[in-house]
Length: 264
Ligand SMILES: [Zn+2]
Image (cartoon, rainbow, N blue to C red):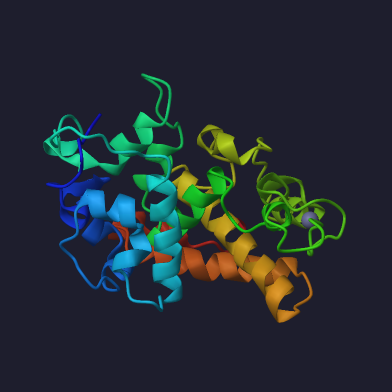
């Protein structure tokens, strides 16, 4: 156990993820806190939202969903806080996550997602994707929020995370259009994605994540804005996202963000 009763551990400043404390990692959400000194005990027992302002921005809402996912199932005990392991002996959210897995087993997607160079919003999306926590039609059906789980993009199958990223006919056309074969059909196997001949090997995982992020957002355009599914629009979103993302890379690496012919 990484912490005891969690009363002496600052939630925002002593919990770390990928070398940054939660206050830094989840900046948007942190700006919505009413009390930035809450303990881990308070956050877990009262719920994350108890110390947040009532209305969250969209980015903060996504960060909140992701953080709640990381924290769920984690329980405290009655012992005094003990901080062992983790980065620089800090209490880390990876430790939290690892406590939920069999001993010695860590999520193979953890490093891929949290240590890659993708924008935080894409990391949050990817984490919820591999954990099957996105609001796909199938997940909404399970919660009885929608009447059916059929994919609104193709109308030909149930919209699961796997369908949305790999088996939807629309998405298969997308992958074919950019001449990339993902080789997997299960989002939990994201770590097994291999560089494709048409994609620069450097940051190739980010390339896949950006594509899936674009697919997810295009799906939103279809479902919520009534747009007709369009490979061209989806590709254009990819190009725009990649160009924006590449600006944060070293100058010598920025060429990987130029998704123009012949890549697309
Ligand atoms: Zn579909």
